[in-house]
Image (cartoon, rainbow, N blue to C red):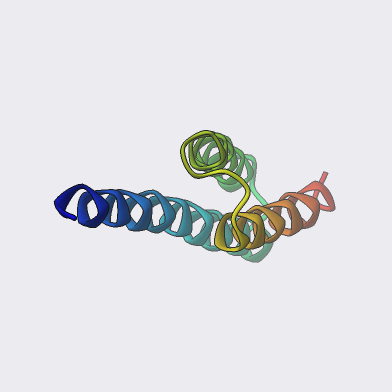
Length: 86
């Protein structure tokens, strides 16, 4: 039973990290829209790269669960939004 508790905690940790990464992307894309300078666009792209790695890690470790797929979809929407800037 102890292993199950640890596994659940690890699953929550992966989802939490992914959620934080997607939140960081949302903030960075928002800044890029507010001030579409090269600096803010590059920061948003960097955050997207980090979030992409977090998605890959989550999918590898947890599989295609609803929370992960939902966050992946949100990330893809933010990517599309950023692409409209250039």
